[in-house]
Length: 197
View 1: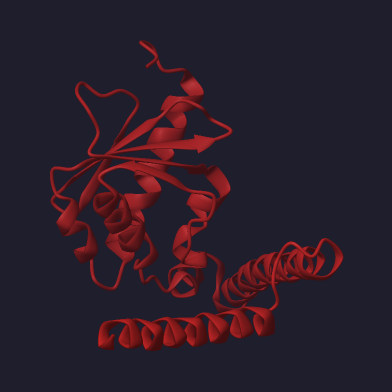
View 2: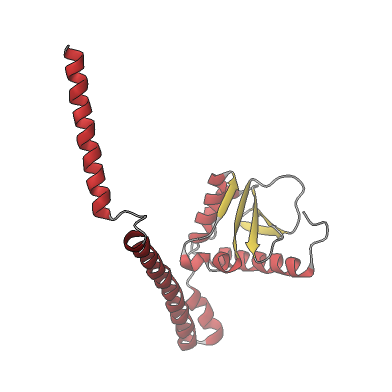
């Protein structure tokens, strides 16, 4: 643990704290999902920044600190981009969780559950048309990112199944399951015969 957090880390923690508290205020449910995290501490390390941040929850608000006396209830490691887009993407890929997993999962679920009409709030500053275009652009970016991940996953799956023959196809899995069921039935019949003798 660093004794003196750097200016970048302090700025990052205060920025995340401000964004999260604003999101909680704008949330349709006013951050009700965070109530379960009251008086809990979650340590989060976001690559490429290696210094952990400590999230503490009280009265529907979050405080983000750069140091902690004691131990965190849960530890999450992810990257900054995935964390900042979590309320829109509704998933936190590349996550390593330790400590109390249920608390970490409550935190991730609470962040995913933030229901904010960003376009409505943005329109107060930019006008309806520009807010719609920004919202539409963000949705397309997120959908494109998810489509790319899905396409990459399908390509990798096909490569492992058909080129390297290391991953079975669904029909091979089904055939194997049927053979296991058949073998189990034969073993049961044999056990009954032995028992009868």
